[in-house]
Image (tube, rainbow, N blue to C red; front, top):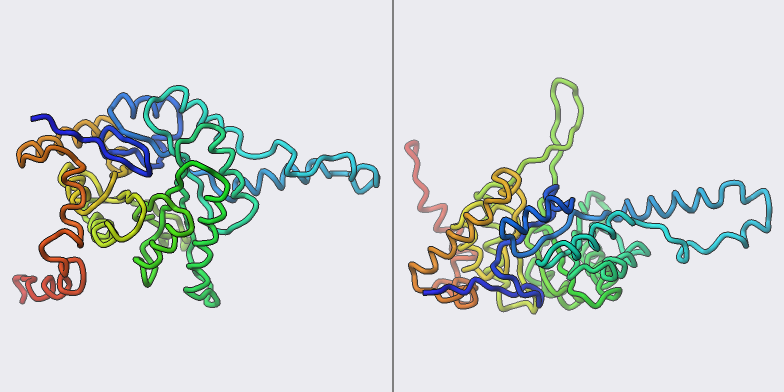
Length: 335
């Protein structure tokens, strides 16, 4: 029996659900070609950061205006900043070259945390050929003056600011720290998001005891982290009008299958590809196909979401009842 592994993500048809998420592996044409040759269904390019865009624009502006105060006529000579070709030309070239070299969808990634003029770069990403944009919202509400309502509205305004610029789909990669995640997901889709990527992994700092310094610390994901995305994808499936992508913790065919059963439209990989190489894509695809064949599934579309909260026999398993059962059933030699 032939198994149809195709899936749709934000209107993009993928040959199977395995997508290479933003990482060092997606930052060059050579590496992108290796990922495509290995069988990946789509690629997300590394993020272009709000700070990069603003820094380049300000640096150019300062260079243009250097010495201009010496002559009043100079102020009328220089063009307005919005008409001057500043910005991340290398990133736009990467998009254009990727579209020329690859046959799989190319998703650009835009990383920011404040609405502003920099969001107009989204239009340039589209013009360079990106099939979609992943808006990676990386914001830590560290001020005691930031209220939850203000933080949530900042997200919504940012999504609206980006989606107004383009006609291609925009996915939002969010953190799991909202007090009402389901409502926030609905607000983001209402603001224009075509997809939600669950979840963003914030890098956590560490303290180096020998040097008494605070240092950034990157730890790759493990399969144990899968359950956070699995729970919320299962809850949101069928409740928000958006595609759902899982990221963080998918390393084995079993991981991918669980996320698809919960309702993910695609599964994005970074850590597993960084540790096992692009060839791991084939291992995952073959494992998913074998499991589906063994259980007489004919397609990913048939299987997808069949164990979401709306569809599974025990919807309470995704909420408080599951927490109670886990605590009361845990055993240890010391209990």
